[in-house]
Length: 113
Image (cartoon, rainbow, N blue to C red; front, side, top):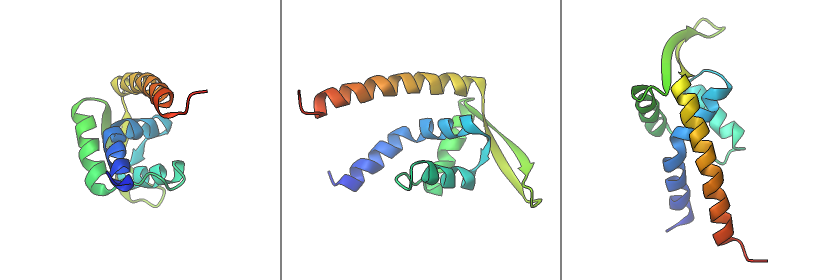
């Protein structure tokens, strides 16, 4: 598998938790989520609209986020996404699982001492 394909699969498998983590910081609209993902990952993680919006709709159907129209300081309307209590719980579960998974990966992939 080519490295970029590997990264794509990693991002695809973790898109939901990354979105939940960003929305934990503050409510955001779609384009803002894409930009913040790129900024927070120092340019390493980039979401396309074709990945982001289906994920947001799925998270909303599952009750993990909710959407509400709001206005920017410029007066433009945007649909903002908010983390729900259920979303907070899922994020906590995902973080715990991720820590265990990362520790196990490091045990296997790191040279033994």
